[in-house]
Length: 359
DNA sequence: TCTGGGGTCCTAGGACCC
DNA sequence: TCTGGGGTCCTAGGACCC
Image (cartoon, rainbow, N blue to C red; front, side, top):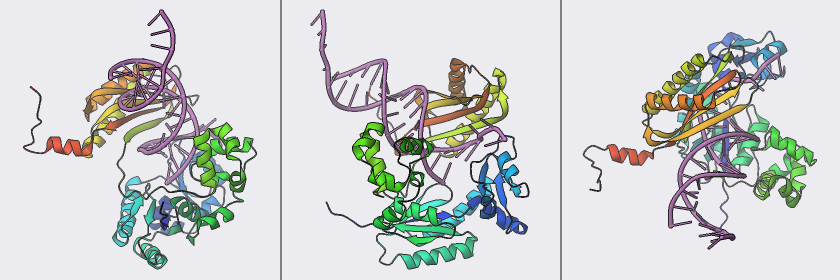
């Protein structure tokens, strides 16, 4: 087995939404700024570093953010503006580097293995991005996505850190396990029951003991993560596997008519999106979150692929009626999946192409 | 102070076919 | 009359990430 030493960079735009808003509201510079919706159930999408000093962070209810820092400037998110700025940033990156795998709106991995001395051009890129887009990017570099990501995440903002796997293993040993990507609150809680709280604890843990609790597969994966082993590739092209639209009501809804109306609207949005992207799906699913936060999904796979609002809406309605929510509804969603193979569709729709049908 | 919206991946169980 | 295992497709729920 030949071991190729990879060089991976992780780029992350610092406080992205808040930074875009600061460009449009220069008077807010140096003041706490929070991007959050206005509704009663809104959450914080981003807070700048001034606001984070008050304990405000992403996904926190906006109401709580307001009480933590009433003098902060609150701005409703403008996703069209963020998408435009994101496009600007990553187009510049793609013009300078070949293997760019974007992950979400404000992050990307770069595979720099083929570049002899990658840090200098990377440093130049950071400067260029700041000059041309006004965005500050944090950079982590390492032999894997995991090392690169952990480095950029823990040294941001304005980070520029390169680490070997061995350095990551020792440097992050004292940090909580949740620092590792893939370990969230649930897994951290289960690990704590085994008295494993830090990355170092997990490094030293007995895999057999872990296996008894998590199953062999997950145990091995967790142990490997703690040692910063990761061979996942940088994926330049990613094809979506599902699309969804969902809506949290400002107050819970019991009225069937109102629920069905909302569901049809969501189905329409979804179908419009499919047609814009020239994709068709075969599975339609609904998601219902009740007032007590229980979440139920129901799915149906159709005979044919579809991109029609009518078909998607009818299927979604049938699924909702069959479930008949037993309590007031907080959230409704529609999802489509099992997309038609893109190449097959292009071939089938190519002019002059005739499908050979058996007689 | 009650917790958005858009995704991915994993697991487990049942149906069905060979 | 009782007993198989493998493979694929589908559904439902859960955890996690940005």
